[in-house]
Image 1 (cartoon, one colour):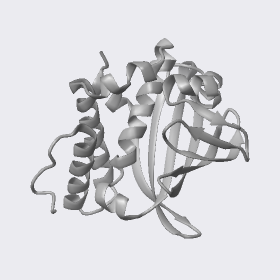
Image 2 (cartoon, one colour):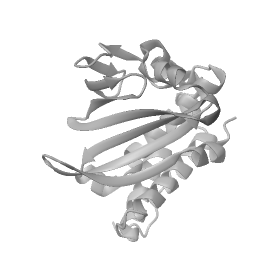
Image 3 (cartoon, one colour):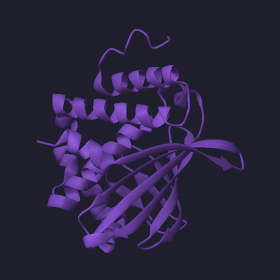
Image 4 (tube, helix red, strand yellow):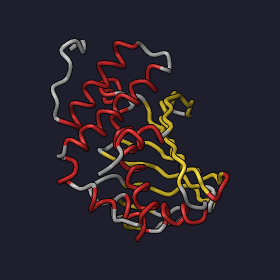
Length: 216
């Protein structure tokens, strides 16, 4: 059993903007503090064997300038690496390119904070689904990392297809989607538009029927 509400509340979420050469991009940031030191957390998020134990199997050259590929998901190029403080990489998926920046920070009591910022240009997908479209996925990644760091379990086995079909998983996705809705509204965007996007995203993840007042 996963303490759904406890895990959702342990994560900080923020939606913002960043100006790039090609124009303004939207950013979403997730972070969580873990009961391990920064060196161990660095190993967990950069070692291929450990990445597979909490996220997805990864192949390629995990070094600056190297290409990586997450099984059945994104690929990209590692652009910068500063152990054990963080790294940045392109995130190439579905014919689109965005960027991720990972930052690790020591905290009191031998703990450390993982923070990931995902930067993407606004497109039709963003307009339709908002930040939750990728935010729910990152929430599930942070859940996997929490399980791995706290107990050493292989999270993909715990959070596989059987789990995602459970009511517990759907409740996790709903709460995550609602949290991203609140982060979206906090940017000052139109609340009705944020609500409609969140409803569509939650429905896509859970198979629920979206609200009928979502503006479609």
